[in-house]
Length: 301
Image (cartoon, rainbow, N blue to C red; front, top):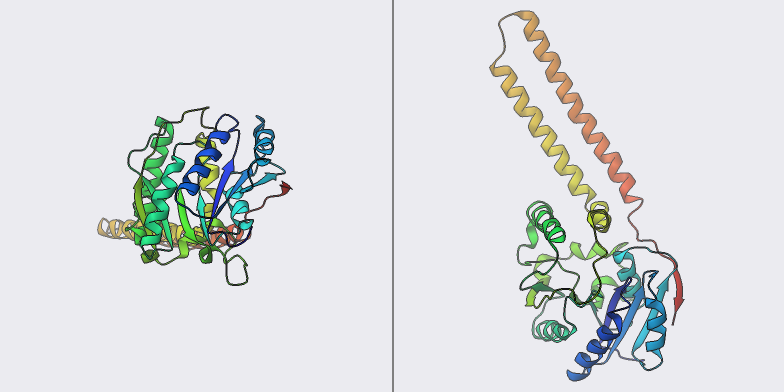
């Protein structure tokens, strides 16, 4: 298949009940707007028969490419794998649960083609996740947007439903620009955009995400942002040390032995600050060595 305009990458995990409808709706949407495309379904070693259903569907779908991972590697690894195996000039990523209606792909594409952004996120008009997931979203949004991602204020929401130019992820020789999907956050803020899209309740099955999996999902983010995190930790420790020193000096006693204790405590606090910095730097080095996404492809159809 040559000159593919759009590659639709979908990580799949235990979605046997929804993948047939998902693929059908993606097909209908791309055919309706007249775009050349491929659909890449990456099965993250599902246990519910998703792979069997995908194999049954591929016989009638020339636009469908299937990838099965040898072991469960997580959503980010599956998405990264699909992107690496894509051929389109532009890439769209979409979840497998139909909460982002495939028809909204047309909304993303229209906005993408009418503007000069390199990446556009689909921003849910109203989030329809469960209560637990919603609480994690609020907490995550605060830390990501207010602490780490302040320069991306023009983007309201970083979702998994997004469209982006191939040259964000690959250079002219089709080599990856970064070790990880989170490399996209190195892009200048003015190259990002977002548009409101529908977000529906889950029609089939239940979400496999819990607190543990959400933490695991965002763990690569911690790897990638480790330098900022280490700097933040050091600034907090140093600020606390300075405040403690000021308060201690303002309440010091005239007794010489008490003054000596104060100076000792100041030295101890400063030592802790230095130790914290060194620990942060070593922790950063450890994280940098494990940044790359690892996965093993079992089959490509």
